[in-house]
Image (tube, rainbow, N blue to C red; front, side, top):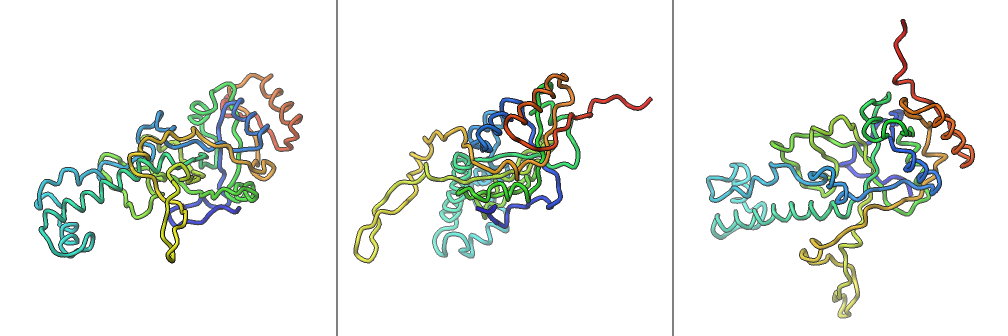
Length: 292
């Protein structure tokens, strides 16, 4: 199906070049299986513990011990009953509102078990750091694409796929608006700003669902409902999922690492020829010496 639309996902411009850097085994897997690998966000948290987690501002409510600790605007909203209804002791309302915010934290934690992402680098030119980090230096491959080509590549898939740029923020001081559950997945710490990332995202909440009996017009029907929190906390998601795509639409160009030996370039060309991948293959000249 076409890429899904959603207001919180900011897509790159249609003409913007997108890069996916990888080592040769991952490239070979993509070509031979005709899929893109979507990594589970919970699995990715091994490398970045803050992946899909909220910044410090979203935990500030845990320091509210009494009315004086609550920011004035929020306190006014609580008193007006904008969150949990009118009447009752203000401290009980503050406690109830803190519970709502704690639930947001829990939902963000569990949502990262349900989110699967495929990452692209937004840039009009090559990145030396991306070659070094993701291309494993000598035996790296990069494929280029753009948002229109990616959309065409997934036309035949049944998965609902979203696409949007990542925002990089200060996790020590900022607070995320949690009006939508996708928002944590589209933010990372400033330290990762060099990635200039665009994410393809699939939200698969099937592991978090269970069959429940629900009365409808006097009859009990089996419907899908959310598992209890204790069960969701124990879910160990799959490390990722391979999603089929049309590589002839997806790939605009193929780049070979600038640090690779000559024979590797020849091997990549032979491999693509055998796999019937008729795309422009370029050996990166990023390490070429200056003109003297």
